[in-house]
Image (cartoon, rainbow, N blue to C red):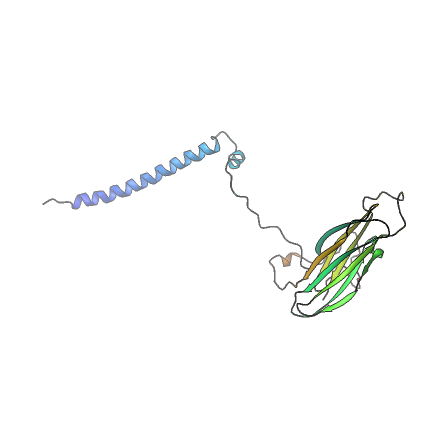
Length: 223
């Protein structure tokens, strides 16, 4: 009868050594292949890293604007001749579960030429309304008075749960083109406590007034 006790013991040790040897050899081969991919050891670390096309990641340090900053509705441009009128239809939706009052106003150098179908309205939860803003180009021309790359411009404000603004630019031309835009204003509250909220404190602009009491400007939190 064959005694295999010693051979079994030896084969167990040999198997462990063989596995470790195979693992080391595989790592060495992998290291050689990486060096070949990077073009050799003579390149700098930055060049070697650039040789590997890894997906670009984000540092996660981009802090969004605070929730109380006005929300942009974009920019629209119209081409009108003096005396003609363009329109923007503001479709306002109250996305909250409580009613809110809404005010419509225009600011900027050409605000006097803007009119609204209504200046204020109250919307119940999830209600919606369409408000028309009209811009009438003045008949008198101002050519030669100054260097103007923009003929007329106004900011259209919708103040509700949050503040929204639309930049409206009017270019004077010899023959008017169609000017009838529709802009959706989704006024949704922000009930989420964000991780970046603690970064923000109301601070006055360095060149402006320090106090904020009694301010009647358009840019402000509407409660």
